[in-house]
Each structure stands twice: as structure tokens, then as C-alpha cells.
Length: 511
Image (tube, rainbow, N blue to C red; front, side, top):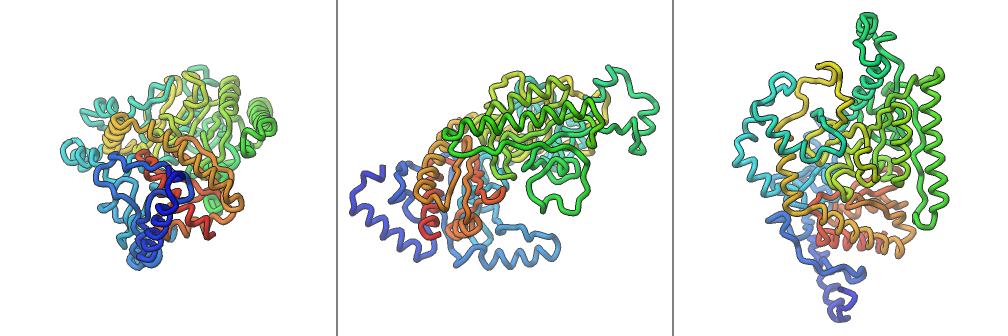
């Protein structure tokens, strides 16, 4: 432990750090002279990975990035870009920008990089498995002409991660598309129950074409304040996080309920937090029951969609009890329980699916949306939610089976390298030292929270903190009002956490 080092060693570390900062490469010792960080060696999770950040420009974004963005913005609006990446040079947890700055990536394409950049196992698969070239060059309409080996590919990928109690997958392209089709699945199931298994009438068929009753029923999806489910119109209706997402776009008149606003630290506010959770649950139950018995403005609630952690809304958590009660309420009222795991799915929270931590077992959600770290996207659902007719949940591509191949290879790596253990050990370590920093700088960093490496904290100076971190070679992201969210890949180890914590400590000292 660094706390046991001699004073002379600490002084030596400080001299090295000062010299390195003057050179603008920030390749300082990974062991902080203040936080008691473990002296861990770099793991061999991604062979050939960079050992540390390296900043070679006076400021970030650098001059080449700015020039390229100026050119790109003439054709496509990329004003949201943090910097321009060189993906050929990026490796493991480190992304390289157009100016050759080596940056520790704590944001990973908005939580979408599962096992780091250019993982050797994936490169080998793309090189030696001919199915990748075939699928890339001949993208099929999977609902019309699935390839002869598609069953084999599904066994290698989707079936290996199918949530408990589920039997079916609908492959799609994006998280928003997954949400849209989850809602459609919920609506179709709700109407099938009302028809008691009978086919739709001719009146229903004909009126649906013109958006009229009874074929276009007055149904809704219940969502939560501060949620984010995507930017297409249905998903956007269920989204309530930032005005920039919704301004000027029409939406459906669907109900919204409060998501629990927990107080931290949790152990100090158990009573208050339980009361807050119960208040929100009562609101949900009342909204659903009223929609099924009276003429509400939003019609009958057919589905409820919720994130295990409200990511874009500020990394807002709720206890397992909240989700257990949502399951009870939805089941008692024949409402589909939709779990949006687009950002939390595939091990980021320390379990394969975040909803596994609710303790529901086989009685979990009815529908689970996935994307991001899976590379492929879509929904899993229970057998009773299968559409009664073909073409109802359908589009041209039904996803991309190259990405299904890639998912299978990603799962191989997760299992081979026991990455769930890495996520849990690193997450505990990261939160421990972030909490230490929050105790030391309570006016700069607050409310540390998370599961696995799905970690966040709040800062009243979040904008400047993020800017200064980037100047030191660390890419991060924000969410909510003043929350900084950490979204590293699954190969993020204590070694990499030390780099992040040291850079954060440097910033906090000067902020």
C-alpha cells in the first residue's frame, strides 16, 4: 500500500509527476501519493493495450480534431462530438484521438464498448471466421431469407444470455427501436387478451388503416419521470429527462409517474427512502387502476417501462423492493412489465442483467430491451407475448446478424476471462476511493453510487471537472443535472481505476 511508502519515495513520485506534467504527457506514476491505492500490475485482459494516458497537444480537442470536425460539420451535424477518434490505434481501455492523444475512455461510446477497443479475440474472429465476411457482404432481410446457419448463430449468441423465464428474441438495430417494438408487443398482447384469443374483426382491421377506433385502440405505456428510452416518437413519449430530447416533437398522451428520489447515504435515510418508494408505488397503482376503470386522457395502460438505473436521467437508483412491487402491480392488472436494459445490460452492473438483482427469479419482467454493449439490439420476451400473426413485429433487416456473430464472440471473452468478477471487484474498489474523495472534497464531489462499474457521482462543478479531466487524458460523460457517469468497458481493471482516480484527484485539488 502506498500509505506505507517512505517520505523519500513520495517526494520522488512528486518530482516525477511534476516533470511529466511539464512534458504534457501525463504519464505519471499510477500510484497516488494521497489515496491509498493498491499497487496492481496491468492485467493481460487485452494484449498490447497502452499502459497509461499520453497527452501530446497543448489542449484537447487538439488542432487536427478541430480541423476534421470543421470539415465534417459541412456535411453532417457533429457539434455534439467530444473529439475525433482514431479507432485503428485505439486499444483496450484507451481511445486514441486524431491528434494521437492516448485517452482513458470512461464513457465508451455512451456505454456501448463491451470488451475494449480492438480486442485480439474479435480481430481473430473477423480474420479467420468466414461467416463474418459473408454476413457483412450479404446482409439479409432476416424475416424473409434468414441464412442457413442462423439457428447456429442464435445458439452462440442470444440464447446464451436470454433472461430467465423468456423464450423468444426479436432482433432489431437500436435501443430506441427495441423500446418501440416492446411497446407494440405489449399493446398486441393486451388486445389479444381482451379478444380472448379470437381474431380481430373486419371492423377492427379496416379502421386501423385510418388510425380510427376500434382498430387503433386508446392504449398507453406508463413511464417514469427522468427516464430515457430513445429518440423515436414512442420511445420519446416515454422519455422525460432533458428538454433537448423532446423540444418541438409531438408525442402521445401517455401517463408518467414519479421515480423514487433517494437520499444519500442510503443507510442514514432508510425510513425516508422507504416512504418515498411507497409514495411512488401508490401513484403507479392508482394510475393503472384508474386507466382500466374510468375514461382517463391516456386510455388503458397496457405496459409499464422502467430502467433498472435511470442512466440519462442522472444515474438514479431504486431498491429491489420497488421493482418487486412493480412486478406485483403489473401482473395483477395484466400490464406488460418492460425492463429497458439498453444501458445496464451485459454485465455492466455486476450481473448479466441488472434486473437479476431484484430477486424475482423466473418471475422477472415480461419483456427486456437490449442494445449497446451487446452490439446487437432487440427484445427478449416471455412465450405468451409472441405476436399472434407474422409481420406484426417486423422490418426489413430485423437487426444485423454480423452483430449477432460479434455478440457470441464477446460472450466467449466474458466467460473465458471471468469478466463479471473483474467488474465487481473493480466497481467495489472504484466506489470505495470515490467515496474517500467525496469525504475529502464534499463541496466538489457528492453522492457516490453504483453497481458493478456502472458508477456515478454528482458535482456542482461537473462541466469544469469534465473539461479538466479531458485535458489530462480522461474521457467521461455527464447525465441528469450535475451527475458524472462512469461507463468503462468490462475489461476495466483496478489498474485502470488507479489511473482514473489519480487524474480525478489532481483535478479536485485545483478545481
